[in-house]
Image (cartoon, rainbow, N blue to C red; front, side, top):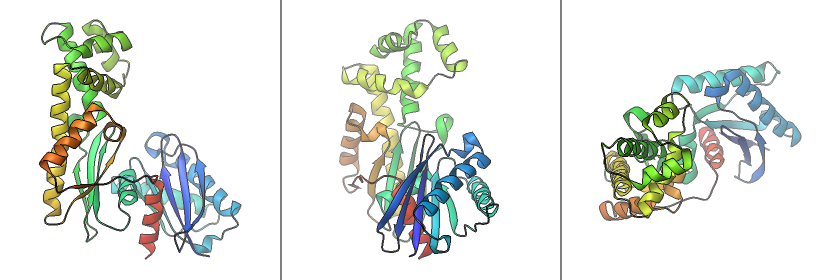
Length: 306
């Protein structure tokens, strides 16, 4: 029996799914942290070897029938980094006298795109801690918009909302800007009362800036003018992503799936964004998937072999 393996490599757990050639589920497995940027390729190679080998042997499968394996993971957007992990995993298997021939590493965004639109065109807009948009045309071309990181981009992300909330807090504390409910909420939750509190937290204590984003959204929901202005401007930044992707798609209709808690959870920010999307790009077809990202990895494994 021929079969395919897809893996979603995460910072807390690694999820494996296996399908046969008819796309019927054979089984799934779970392993530990597989973020190779944090843990190194050697440790992650060991984690992946244990996960894959335990699944194959535990289900009495033969490696000769494994047609393709795809891993989607954070940090694999750069070809050189993905290749480095690919080589390390293959070497790990070879050291155990196993030839893992068709093993491919892709980014977590790539498998999210395939999960939402398996084998067909579409796009995903990711807004979590950061923001980025990926598209796949009917010809199979992979397109990208944004993803320039917190210093150059990440519009509409949790980080950017939190950063702007802290900027507004700092300005309110020292009198350079209008007072805002954000300042009160930040003080109540984090104890930041003076400029030095902000400086120490952000520049010395590695404060999680994105953790302020929910406070900005809540303040806007309560009618705070500054918070509402932040949501309006940052949602415009996400709409700009869609405008650019539509241009890249040309005459082909853009189908869109949203990824990340900033946009998928019901809140004022996601409401503002969706209203703008409907108003400015009524031709964009918004559709969501309930499938886990690992399914995109196993779909890619099947496509790679076809």
